[in-house]
Structures are given as structure tokens and as C-alpha cells.
Length: 450
Ligand code: FAD
Ligand code: UQ1
Image 1 (cartoon, rainbow, N blue to C red):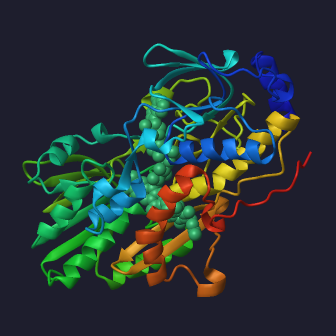
Image 2 (image 1 turned 180 degrees about the horizontal axis):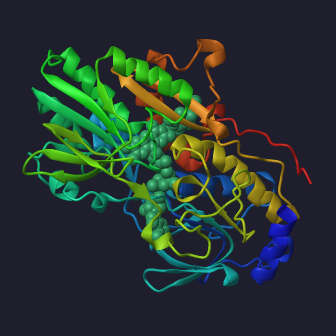
Image 3 (image 1 turned 90 degrees about the vertical axis):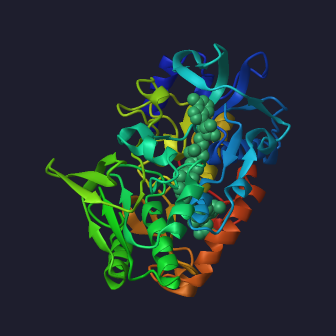
């Protein structure tokens, strides 16, 4: 299959060097050897790992050979927004200026990509630049569709609406304000149907709120409920069953396949659409909303994307299915796994190894991504269920051998999520030196399988 792909790419992409090995040595003047789009969790991690990989092979790239295109001023540790919503962290402590995270040997292009011309190995940007590359890595993330639910924007803007979400920097502290202030009434936590990043986060914040209300004597007056567009508590049966048991034990009602479709802010009413298309409304005192999510508007209809707008890559190598000098990972890709930073820790070394091998030898290496992803499910203060799984929704638990079944919430995991992960993220992951379940040790890969 790979040979067919490469033949196509060589035909389609005339500037791609023979076997995709680089022919030119010059970077600069709007041309880079490796152009990374997006300086988020995936973009920073992969740009650094690529630079480091060439250096380790004695083929160090020059300063300016690698560039990151990103228009944002701030880089956010998004997994921390759940901690902000739980009253455990200050949101200002979880962000850094993007520029401060890009090392001097990597060029920062402050602009946003607008269109792709894979046949001529270039992209155009919002400011009208054409930027050329030998190799392209796309890591532009996904889009949170706040406009997808009528009433949501108005509710988020109104400090007294009771409506909040952990899914943005601007609103994650409102979540804690609302949870802490609520004395009685119904608190509805929603999860949309379809793909979202960190699919466990909608219920993590509910468990944290539940714990807070229990511990402050509000267990009898505040009634939390989980309304989800999905058919179960979680995609992996093992964790779904454990979470459902916890929900029943804790007396929390749930509505499955109920997708939030509008909010009437003035009357404190949320309307949900059921699988059969009928609607049902519910009153709330507090409404925590997870907006629907999808590909960035700019990616829709681009030649490197599938019909929905996800970048179309091989699920094991992360090489583009049509253009062999294009790669993608993280939330913008069509990798059929749950979209998390944890997943990126396993995707990046595999992508890097294959990219390096293709440039160096014209062939893929033996490195393959098995779909590893993880969702640290906070189930209350001091407890966390560390869901870890791979393609096929099969559990792949890092600590089970030493600590036992990870469907059991544990205090150690809580501290991994609250303290260790934010620390290693800024100290190592954004610098390309953190490998998720392998910690700081870069996994070793078999040589080329071909
Ligand atoms: P992002 O980090 O979102 O980065 C995308 C980058 O692309 C941004 O910097 C953006 O400015 C840039 N960009 C956008 N458009 C363009 C353009 N046109 N041109 C150039 N650049 C562009 N993951 C976990 O592992 N564990 C968790 O517990 C967890 N909890 C989460 C809780 C919440 C509330 C949220 C929101 C996320 C959570 N995640 C968690 C998910 C994790 O944060 C994401 O999966 C991860 O950050 C995705 O990385 P990315 O680089 O693909 O996208
Ligand atoms: C991880 O590496 C990571 O990044 C720092 C997370 O935070 C975003 C995680 O949530 C998880 C689960 C991992 C994976 C690491 C281990 C040790 C299982």
C-alpha cells in the first residue's frame, strides 16, 4: 500500500525530492525544510522532536530549517482548564506566550495558514504570504463551535446566567464560580454527540462539582445530572461500566443520546434533541456545557483533508495518504483515536521516526502508532480513574501491573493529573523530551520493515 501512495505522491507532487529525500539544502526566503503548522501541544512537541532526531543522527538541521506557523499570542495547557473549573488552579498559571516556547533554532512565523497547495509544496497565509516547504507537518488543532448551540454565547457572557464551560480560557474560571456559588437546584452537565477533545472532561467536572457539594453540606439540595449525546458514559466498555456504577452509587441521574441543541437563558431551560429527532427540555440552576467540536473552518475543502475537514493520514505512520511529504497528528488529524495531549505523546515519536527515515532513506521506518490515548478521569477530590487505551478501544494500562486495575480510582493518579502532568508538560513535552507512558525515555523502534 505504501508503495502505491508514494508513487502517487511523486507523480502529484513534482517538487517532492526523489523518494522524498530532500534535494535542496537551502532554507530561508519563505522556504523551510520542515514547516510545522500550529504551535499547540502537537506542533511544539513534534517540531522539537524532529530537530532533535536529525541532530542525534549527526545530520543536524541549521537554525531556520524548521519553522512553526502559529498566529496565537498564548499557548494554553488545556488539560488544566478542568483543574481551574474545579477550583484547584489559577488559569493564568497554565499559559505561556507561544513565542517563549519556541527555541531560537526554530523560526516562529506569526501568521495563520489559509490554504494548501500540496502539488507545489506550499501554503498561503492570512497575511498573503506563500510559504514553501520540503516537508510539512500539520498540527492546527480543532474548532470549538460555540455558535453551534443557540443561547450559549449569551449565557457564557452573562456572569449570572449559571451557564459555563471548561472548554475555553475565558470561561473556565466561571465554572468554579458557579459551582461554588450554587446552594440548591438542578445542575446539568452536558456532553455533545460526536468528536470532542478529551471525551472524559464533560464528566470530570461533574464529579468534581459533586464532590464539592457533598463535602460542603449541599448534597441534599443540589441535584447533579449528566445529559449526554453519547450512548454511554465512555467509549471503552470497561471504564464506561465502572463510571456508570459510580454514577448509580452516587445517585446521579443520566440521560443518554440527548444532545443539547439550544438554551433559553432567560427562562433557565435547556433543550435536547434525542436520537429519534424529538426534543425534550429541562430546567436548570447551573448548566455546564461542552460545545460541539469539529475541524477548523479553514481546513474544510482543503486538498489534504477528508470530506469532513480532518487531515487524512495513515493511522499507524501519520504520513498523508496522498502526499508523502505531508504528515499530521493531534486534534486536526483523522487518526481514529480519542483526541488528547496524552495521545500526542505517543504519536510524535512515531511520526518523527518515520519522517526522518523517509527524508534520510526514502523509506518508512518500522515505527507504528497503536492508537494509544488516555483520559485521566477525575472522579472526585483526591481520586482519579486513569483510562488508557489503544485502537479498537482496547485498554493499555501503564500502571496496572504494579497498582492493579486502573478502572479503580486512585489517589496517586489524582496527583499525576493535578501536579505531575502540568509540570512535565511545560518542562519537557513542549520541548519534545516527554514520551507519555515512557516518561522522558524516547521509545526505540524497529528499523525499516520494508
Ligand atoms: P492545540 O493544542 O489546540 O493547538 C493548535 C494550535 O494551532 C494552536 O496553537 C492554534 O493557535 C494553532 N492554529 C489554529 N489555526 C491555525 C492556522 N490556521 N494556522 C496556523 N496555526 C493555527 N488531553 C489530555 O491528554 N489529558 C487531559 O486530561 C485533557 N483534558 C482536556 C480538558 C479540556 C477542557 C480541553 C479543552 C482539552 C483537554 N485535553 C486533554 C486535550 C488536549 O488539550 C488536546 O488534545 C491537545 O492540546 C491537542 O493538541 P493540538 O496541538 O492538536 O491542538
Ligand atoms: C501524559 O503524558 C500527559 O502529558 C503530560 C498527560 O497530560 C496531558 C496525560 O494526561 C497522560 C495520561 C499522559 C501519559 C503519561 C503517563 C505516565 C501514563
